Image 1 (cartoon, rainbow, N blue to C red):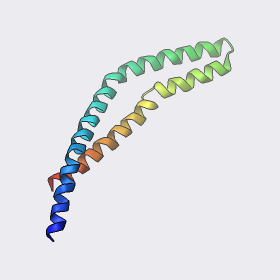
Image 2 (image 1 turned 90 degrees about the vertical axis):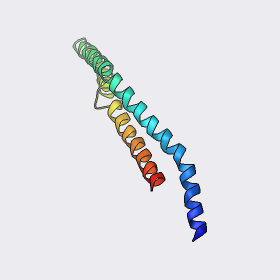
Image 3 (image 1 turned 30 degrees about the vertical axis):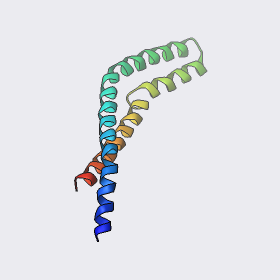
Image 4 (image 1 turned 135 degrees about the vertical axis):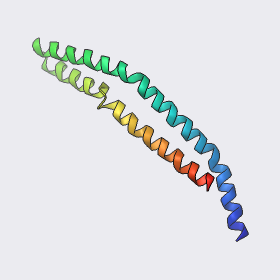
Length: 102
């Protein structure tokens, strides 16, 4: 019984720095996402305008590529994926914090 308690304490000591790292990383990711949201929205709009101009000029392939880039930069593309990743990091940090505090 004593060995189990000692191992649990050692695991908590090992997990504590990781919990701190995951928590700080999650807050940093959330900050960067909120700060870059407006910039990505503006860039997405400009790329969309470029896609429309390319379609009007008859450059279908270029227009499709610009539409794909506009989607990736829009709030529904890569920023949404980064948001989900930030949530996973925050959830992992929260799980480690709960383990350390129990």
